[in-house]
Amino acid sequence: MDLKSKIILISGPTASGKSKFALSVAKKINGEIINADSMQIFKEIKILNARPSAKDKSNIKHHLYGFFSVKKNFSVGEWLKRCLIKISEIKKRKKVPIIVGGTGLYFKSLVDGLAKIPNISKRNRDKARLLQKNIGQKNFYKKLIRLDPLCKNYININDQNRSIRAYEVYIQTKKSLYTWFKNTKVHFQNKDFVKIFIDIPRAEVVKSISYRTDKMFKAGAIKEVKRFNNLKVKKTNSSFKIIGIREINEMKPDKSNLSLIKERITIKTRQYAKRQMTWARGHMKDWYRVAPNNLVSYLKKIS
Image (spheres, helix red, strand yellow):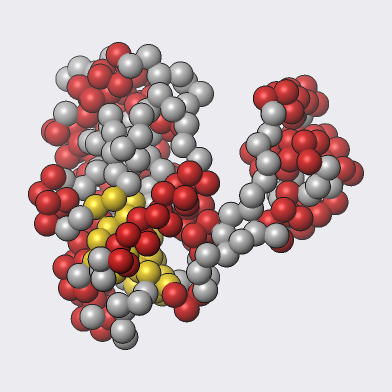
């Protein structure tokens, strides 16, 4: 397979070995790595996010890691814009872009494009959220469907976030969210990509997550959270979703409860990995599924 003109996409659940595999691919095919993980963009957090080491980044050029403040929110649209620039720069250097991470929406925006929906006013955002809170999700969903019948084909009745998003878009633009999606600009054709999903068995994920959690604490995860707390980040900011911050803050870490904190982080991470795999089954159906024990042979095959 000639990969010089391709864009390599590597995804998989957290702790599945994506970054290590991406490094191996990059070394084989003269590639550079672009981050596609919404939590690894934050510059102040690197231990809890298992960001690639300085050694890894010195061997292979990495992009879009640790460049954004935890005090600000970062959108899919902003990532796509920066990613497209990096892809162009890497190709100009006659190298292969390798995009790796676990944020499915980032990959979806790159492959399928991103609808250019006008900015939603704070008034309409607040209006949608307040209404949903006051009347409950089921009644809110019924109201949404009456306004925008297309949503019934795409949004589950229990999906609060997507329901609110669809509602605020409709009251702002008087158009369905899915009408906007139909007019989306696609930047690449499907043949431009090689899509690889690391399909790791659940038992291996659990073992890998436990090992990584222990490693994070040895590397200074508690001190990292203390530094994060000193920054006075708003709890509504997306950086608060980083697994480990809430768990460490909810219990004062000491020798007596350290194992319990680790257990909570491990469980939360396993739940996240499960959501990633569920999302992939629905949205990454045409990706190559490669088991961890077949990564070496698959690497030889594509290189």
